[in-house]
Length: 243
Ligand SMILES: Nc1ncnc2c1ncn2[C@@H]1O[C@H](COP(=O)(O)OP(=O)(O)O)[C@@H](O)[C@H]1O
Ligand SMILES: [Mg+2]
Image (tube, rainbow, N blue to C red):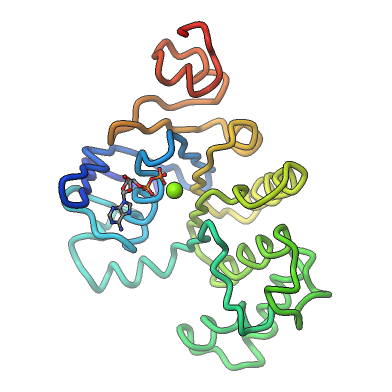
């Protein structure tokens, strides 16, 4: 069953039409990768999915309910979607532990003791227990990414959306993030991941969409997309026989 269904989603900034009729079904528990040239609207699309950006037209249905129709159900459902920003967006003035507990305490009303217990469990999962009292500036890029993931997952979302999780990391770290994402499938979290890294995409999913010109041009595994018969898509995925 689809956890998220996007129908005819459109979004423009002034004259700039960024999304012009996106249709997409994301299956519960899967990892959905979103690729496409720089500026094609990947970030705009995932920001719309979480209503960080309001689309001009279309539907976003989360478990069958249209997020754009009813503001109250939108807020409720939005709490089930976690978002990890490209730049991690950690709170610089808070320790690792407090980065994880802030929303638990302020948004979910957990006591400090409850929040700390949940945060410590999540930090252990991400092998970050030893760093709980550090501040973001004291962490490596890969460690910041782990904290950003942990902070999102501690809220127990049903979907986690990641924007270019490897863009700030070296290749070895990227492999590590791929392993972390693959491990998430055991937790029954649906993952939506934007990336420009073809190797990384292939490591985490067989289900990649290629966006350009405001629509989804093709969908499938990386190996399929590289030979799908559409010159623009094949070129992006490294098939240079079209010149
Ligand atoms: N807040 C905004 N205001 C105006 N234009 C924007 C805004 N956000 C994105 N854009 C424009 O929308 C287009 C798509 O941007 P984006 O979704 O960030 O692309 P991608 O993530 O694929 O690189 C770009 O032309 C960008 O300049
Ligand atoms: Mg982007």
